[in-house]
Length: 607
Image (cartoon, rainbow, N blue to C red; front, side, top):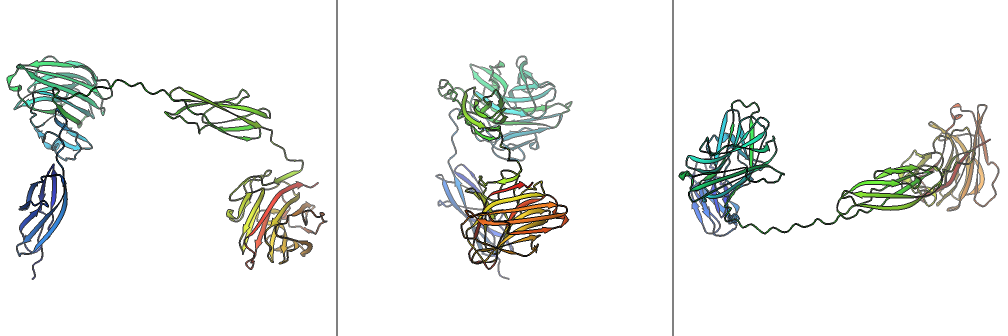
């Protein structure tokens, strides 16, 4: 069979200006890889399954791997690598680790200063979520050291937190380790978390007495530490402090000197922990972050700027809107603002002795009149601002005697008819997009082959006179304008105006949607586009009989007598019901869309 070409793949890892590559994942389905040839994109080459290369300058390079199998077939793959010169640590910085990497077992290598060395099992250590983590059962000890730091004058700082507190639990900060000997600052927790500090040489030899720090270690809280170690004239001084994050940094809590010659050389720093056998709150997770070692003698301390007085508090701005309904007013001050903070309180004075609080408020006045409403807002810095506005309230106007329903359409409604002036909300029985209120009329807009219905709320009378005005902008043959005299449930009495092509109007009374109550009549009225027409429909029930009387006439002409009068004895329509309007534009209509308007609709009780 023909030789199958190999598959070339590789991975890369960058460190500063250097790259390490590994092509051992390449494969050959019918044989083996005989050779690996690397081209690093800057003229450098290499051979073998793994290789490394140092670039002369920072940049992005295309690395090419060519593998050849034992049958002579070759395959090539490329990948870009980006290298950069390592960032030099700040002046005086000897070691630093912010734990920004992820390591499943162990602590890996610090950001500055090389790899961590574990003196106990790696499975207790991990790096994740920006911290170096140590997890410990009861009766366990852990140690981890940095590489040797080339100075005998060091300041070791960092942060730690612990998730559980046990009595006689130790957290150790290794100030200097040389060979098998060390100086360690040891924090011993009591059962209540109170921390005692001591300096040890080796594992357990105290250098002076332990001291109470006054610090209480709380589960989950962050604590800061600083351990300075300085050797001069054959004497090493170890100074230490620990404090809770967010509290002032204290002075040195413990200072000790020692003259052991073997510990006067440069060494490593590190951390140590011990959980006793008697511990009941286990496992214990201890985390470290932002560990750093600097030479305090070579750190340039920048000058401290003099304190700057905080800017003066800017006063807030008070604004409000108001809405009147009868003798009541609703106010809203939520538009008030504070440029450098927030509004802390709102105080309302309604000008009649009444007060209120909060961004919004309402108040009922005892009498009609004009009142000065005052809003005072106070910001979170204590500054206040005031604004005033006059509101005029009046007792709601009672409808005239006998008036049951009225609508002059003085509002604006984009879709639908909203609520009448007297009598409640209109109910649409067809799509709201055909209805609107504007310019003082209720408007209905209709294409060809369309029907609309709109009803009032139920009117509590069986003896009513329904009056109003209407106009239409176009006339079509067999177009209907309906005046609903009474609607109860799904049944109704309707007076229907039918227009001929020339606008002549025929009047009829219908029960339901199409059942005539008597014959249609010619009114002698001609409906003209744009002209205003008046109507009156009286509906009266007595002794089991309902009488419907109707007339329509052009505005400016004498009101005629009844043009149609009909009686009907359907029991279901002898109860109070709603009034309304109806319209129909036939499919054959050519003058479309048709706009029909109504105004000054009113229902009054008949004697």
